[in-house]
Length: 123
Image (cartoon, rainbow, N blue to C red):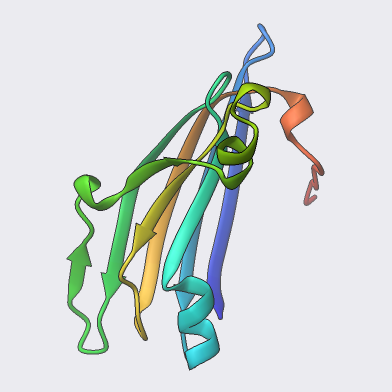
């Protein structure tokens, strides 16, 4: 279950931008553990820089466990393994989350408006 989701975008005059995504997820069942036990973040390595400044687990007793940056793997995507010449798409993987609440934040830099599918404005 996604308890909280927040995305913010900022674009500069030169057309580049930054996207920040924050999610709080609670895996309540075995299906949730299967879906969120490993989180995968895709990005275009040729144009984007993806940072994961925060991944932490909230245990049932309220304690917070920070995930060290060294536990995040930067891997080639399945597409790159098949056709390495044709893609710059990569993935960052973080694993080891079970029936806990997961908080994570992503920062993607050098995005353009072409990277955005939909913009919704709340008035």
